[in-house]
Image (cartoon, rainbow, N blue to C red; front, side):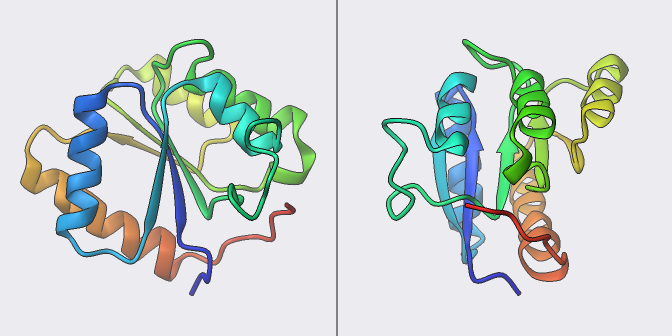
Length: 149
């Protein structure tokens, strides 16, 4: 099981972010959920660039939970950067969590190296089940690769 409990959520919609946070909280999961609101901040955080250059304060997450439609840089652009331009983090598990069920988005995400693609559930009960399943699979069962800081 992981010792790093950080999940980095990149979600620009405050209502969706609150629902996701509430689902994780209500499920009483042992996860530290940190939120960023745009793709440029995600790249800066993951790349250790200011203001996220202190790894004691901004550690590499165990999993990146990424929306597709983000301001400044889309989730797919963040994923492409991560897989193709940042060698040290290319193994970081990335889960897309988005409202898009379009096959073009799904296929593009997998072409870019996403580990999982999840559509946001419409009910809070389904979102809580998703949070519990996410925790069980990604934080307990999955064997994560080494990721350099």
